[in-house]
Length: 348
Image 1 (cartoon, rainbow, N blue to C red):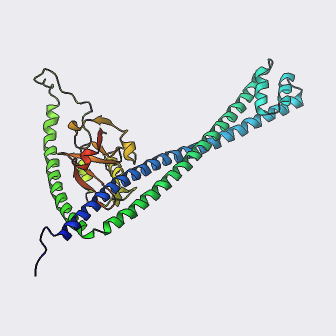
Image 2: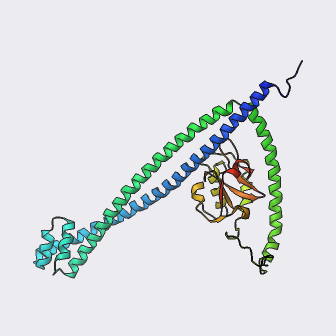
Image 3: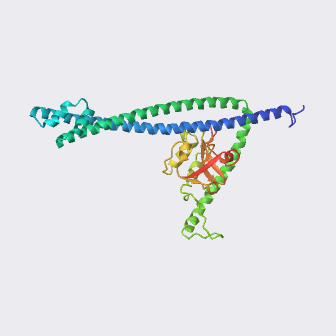
């Protein structure tokens, strides 16, 4: 029985189809990751607004209670002036006012108002102003929270729609994907071995580096000392922490060992060394100090695709990250697509 040749048009057509679909999937994954990070950023903002709302509501309650007490004092003063035939100027101002604002205006223009009455009115005016200001802030924050909820709902719908499209594409080339996954598993095993060897080497070099840091820097042949723009790396230990989560599945919005998205992984890993980062690649890019690509050190954050993706640099031109839905936390090289979409790095 004849066997198909390598150049069989049917096989070549299938391979071309698989390659085309995988290219579409890669673009879809990149788009999806950007939307997911926008969703994460909206969540960060929403949580902040909700915290501010809660605090402002508590402060508004206190201000209203204070206003009530101040108004009670003012009412008691009015009764006292009326029943005791007190200072006529104060009584005239109090009785003639049509509103609190009118009362403030009258007190400010009257010439002969007692210090006691001035103090009582000042308290009422102060707390009334605070209540009104807090009510305005609450209204604004409530509207902002509602807008963020709508934004997240829209992005969630976009994510779910893109996930459906992605599943449909992948189902058409399931056999080719299985082969690619086997190849990727072998590559990841090799990269992990290389990373472990690199970590051991870094740990062995640490004492020597600590000793050399006590010695004055030596000038280069040009007579100047090379100084990097970023501070010395202080969180290289996050590399060995991140390594523990290799193989954890990607889950959008995830920030725990049950599943990570890219910024969720970074946030979780850095939290293990006491560093609090926001759950958003866009927000994380605003943290720390910028680092040029030729000065990258293990533990630096590396950003790609218009800040839509982030990972942790591990040395040797590689980084650990949670790539996209359907994948797992893995090691990748800053080459190919990642090199072409590289944005920059930050040292935390």
